Length: 237
Image 1: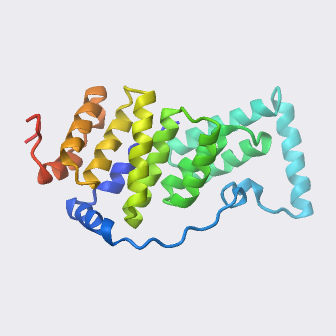
Image 2 (image 1 turned 180 degrees about the horizontal axis):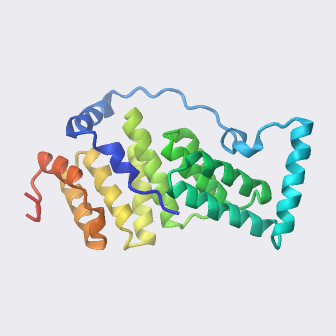
Image 3 (image 1 turned 60 degrees about the vertical axis):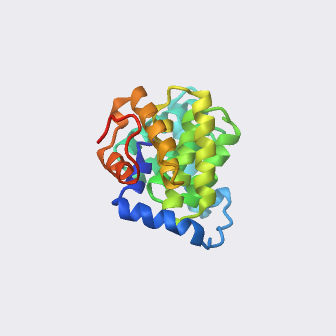
């Protein structure tokens, strides 16, 4: 599952917004983080009335009969949830991830999927909480690492906390070690270094990302980067 380049939608609301975020790095006063539990992020875990529990049991029993086993049922609902997520139907995706969790709470794709939904909803604390849970069982997955980094970038843009920026860079550097051709990860490394005001590195990672996938090139980001430093490779003017 891939989260599209939401980090860049976060980045460019105009280069002046980026400058403001850069200046705020040294001024940030972070609000306390909420203490989250899995019940806060997995909506299917909500408390039920006795009547709701009976209805849920009937639904799960019916679903279990439709598939070879509960794991197969969970995989089916994850597939449907991904389709809804890609169509930007976030409420439906969340509901289907919940159905998948009810069928098999060990399915790591469920936690990953919830993380992407929360990321798109800009609920970054919840996104990071559940994505790190997914990472515990899939530590070498470059796409999961990139999605985690994307949520850190999103929270940095919202709150200007330098810890998010540094953690994003760390995760992305790990992702490209596992997947040297990951254009999306290189592109977000360019964004991270832009915010760190390391424009030469930003250009380097931008060119590397475009060499892997020309589709990641974004005119707004290139224009913002050109305002800070000319392209050392001379490709963009």
